[in-house]
Image (cartoon, rainbow over all chains, first blue to last red; front, side, top):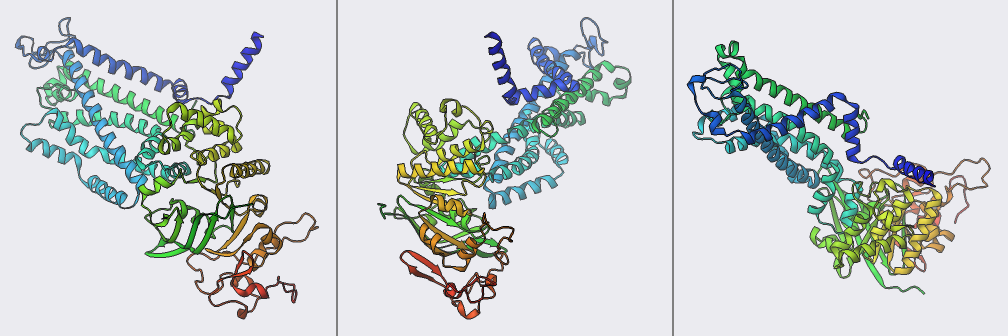
Amino acid sequence: MVKEKDNKKEQEIISAPPTGMQVVWREFIKDRVAMFSLIIMVLAISGVFIASLFFDPAEVMKVSLRSKYAPPSSLHWLGADIGGSDVFGQLIIGAKNSLLIAIAITLITGTVGIFIGLACGYFGGWIDNMFMRIIDFFITLPSLMIIIVFITIVPKYTVFTFILIVSLFGWTSIARLVRSKALSESRRDYVNASKTLGTNDFVIIFKEVMPNISSILIVEATLSFAGNIGIETGLTFLGFGLPPSTPSLGTLVAYANNPLVMSTYWWVWLPAALFILILMLSINYVGQALRRAADAKQRLG
Amino acid sequence: MKTSEELLVIKDLHTGFRIKDTYFDAVDGVSLTLRKNEILAIVGESGCGKSTLATSIIGLHDHNKTRVQGEILFKNKNLAKLGEDEFNDVRGIDIGMIFQDPLSALNPLMRIGEQIEEGLIYHTKLTKEQRVNRVFELLTQVGIPNPQRVARQFPHQLSGGMRQRVIIAIAISCKPQIIIADEPTTALDVTIQAQILDLLKDLQAETGSGIILITHDLGVVAEVADRVAVMYAGQIIEEAPVEELFNNPKHPYTRSLFNSIPQMNSDGKKLNVIEGIVPSLLKLPRQGCRFSPRISWIPESAHEKDPVLHEVAPNHFVRCTCYKEFYFKGEEGGRA
């Protein structure tokens, strides 16, 4: 009797197709690098946010000339910078700032891109034409130069304006990708079937078309998140990012502009550089595993 | 006895596709009437405009590239002139549609129950609980056992026949007066086809709605239809009650179609085919009898200059006079 029950259960397990989460989980189990990256990514991001609770930005940024370029010690775990501020504290707070900025940019560009892409793909016609020409225009612009010029001429820019100006150029690629997927999905019969029921366009777009391209949206968001961390730190490194009073991963790496710091006081910039490297690599690996999971032809597991 | 109350009247409908700034009519002057309690079959080969006719009726055509002219009268409204918002009040509640491919017509990410519920949400004031009960009721009505379980399943977990039943359940969810079935059995195998056709017939008998059945399968037509309209190159070339059409086909195209059905006892004889192909929309001769290039052995004089529908028997209409002189190739003199 018990055995029969077990058999039934087993059969059910075999016959039930794997759910979305199971597919993703299998992909990570098959790919050790992706699994390792996932663990690193979760640890790094949660670690930064939890640790940042114990640091007071004002305290960390306090100038104390006595400990100028202090080497790593029990007081300063990763030493101190030119102003005697604790590097480890700056690393935590800077990483938190960088991550928050990257998340904000990803959310803004993602939302705008998804909205415009879905509208273009679903409606087609003049809406599609108009937005595609606008996107073409944005893509031809040298975005990095314009961001730099903007930051130079605006006298008092804040984190918020920085997020906006970077987002202004970031939404185009997502909009294009979403448009191409929405275009093919919107011509499917189930969309027509929904129309014959009298469902309005708005509901069809968000309840039917969007869920069917969600796998691509998740992958794209993950990969562009890694890219956005790179953009923020890169611009800050060049001196066009956040104001120097706000620590970020980029400001720490930017200390390496000074040859003396670069060669002698490695503890100031090296941890931040390594952190960026590891974080971006792991996010990328995770993103690629998600991409494979989203496409049955590329799956490993 | 069948009532003759008219549900849907189509008058001189033209549906054109835009190709390089010119509109080419894929449906070219179709007039039809659908009555209550009736299954009207529209038959024709691929590309003759039957699906275009269906999408024009329910307003699914691509508004950027398509032009619909003429009248589609339903409840004193001209559907051809309705805007998208007004159309949403007609679709679903008054006109339902059954699609050809049951897999692609279901959203792969929505549970069956939710998909059937969709129309009920927009067109009825039922509460959530009532809607769920109605979903079970509908699933039972289309012959799905264990509706409680199926309602929670996803489309890929069902077989083709089950999916088509679900599609039918969706189409009838709001008790529409007109159901348009665009090749509902093409994607199914023969045994399931018969079941689905029976189901359609039963539902129609129950609800008294009118069904427009679009198909290229004459077997399906003989099985369920009350009246048949044969389409060729965007026009209706013959229209008759089903027994009349099968017993006494007139138009050369209809007769050629019947002639090319494979026979069980034809003992290795070659299958009869109709010469040539359906002309492309761009090269379609807009004047004269459109079938004339494919029966080139019939003299030019047999055709009308501007073919119209002639009533040859009660309710039996045939376009062009060429049927009078038509004979199959190689049967010289064997005139009808």
